[in-house]
Length: 234
Image (cartoon, rainbow, N blue to C red; front, side, top):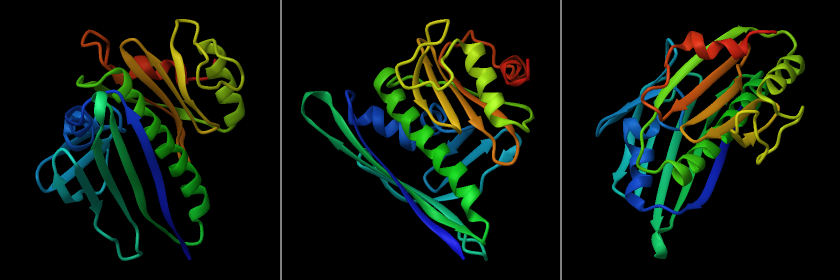
């Protein structure tokens, strides 16, 4: 068995197609909303997440500023992942972005991995939209920090929400104690926008809670140890 999947994004943002293209087709742009640090050239896309390198993806379409697509090689068990982005410029400086993340998860135990992955992609799609709405043309420094292993996820989320000044079940539009605004929330993820950052908290698949932040302030600390402090139990 296994699972074929497609996850769609269809969004319109008040910025020009060139800014959208930079966000989805360049290393600094992708690194400003996706996870970890990404590098691109005309042929490949490479992403590093902490000490882990994702499988290298091959560029399958590169038509600026309209269409960018790439996919990983298919492994012997059928696993792969593909990203496809279509950009349409509209009147009044608005741009429509249509994106599809697709792939195949092998094995009989795909369900837990698919749940974690689908929540993660939903967070990244929301981050991409928020980035294009509030930080177009700017690049961020990605910071990845890992907390200790979590055995009680409801308690871990409750503690984090309380520390941030959020209600027990935060929703988009809620504000943290220091003025950050929630732009995405689920029982696996949390995204918060501040004037100079996009803060993300992620339930690691079979692991710890992860902070995957995008820092637009060049003076902000990029030390993972600093950002891991909120991930430790009180």
